[in-house]
Length: 277
Image 1 (cartoon, rainbow, N blue to C red):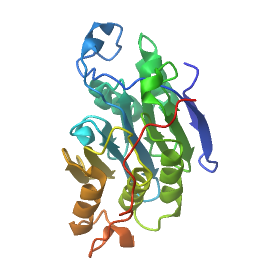
Image 2 (cartoon, one colour):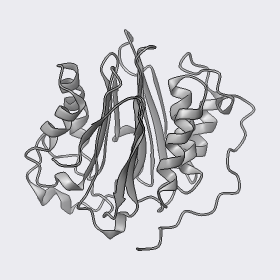
Image 3 (cartoon, rainbow, N blue to C red):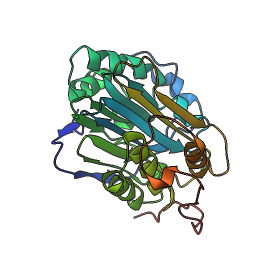
Image 4 (spheres, one colour):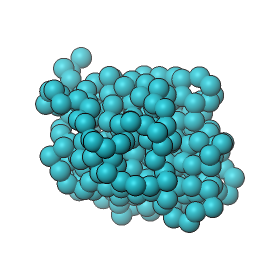
């Protein structure tokens, strides 16, 4: 499984991007997906996301945006005291809880991805990212995806990973990582800042339909924070507005998450696919 790897938490690294085909929904697949017949479904699940953990605070979370409806309910998975996981491109929602089960049982993030993909005929069409509560990160890119999903890539740093496919360009991932590292606030604040930063330069080149954020906290059962925009003309900005209006202990001192809400990039251009190289 050549492109799944662990990254040292004190060093940000960029994974080489490539071309890919917008993914097909495969929510009916078993844990190890060898039957490719289900891939005849036309649903496109391309997206960009971030997974992150704050080991000191005992908090982990994920945020995501896409042209796919209700993406925040099928891509990110979080569990208190365990970590966060995202499955995208040829995404497999049924992998969410088993991935966290394996992490909770003591498997490393790399071992979890290896286990998920070892018998999968479409392994190189998947984009997966996972972080545990030690801050260890692993990510796997869809190396055999076709031209329709350009641009895809991933970027990791201290206790986080940003990844996406079908993007307007590399600036989406770079902007997400930069915003996550530079934002002063809680983990939820930093996740929102990263998602907004990825959306402003274009995000998913097909449009802005849905977005979501999920956060879990030590000793709190279920999602500590869960916020979604399932169908919208401007999902990330609508999610950011809802976040600013929210009163919740998961929020910190980040001014971007406070009222009065101010549009972070009102002069954005319409998303377009990058030129084929």
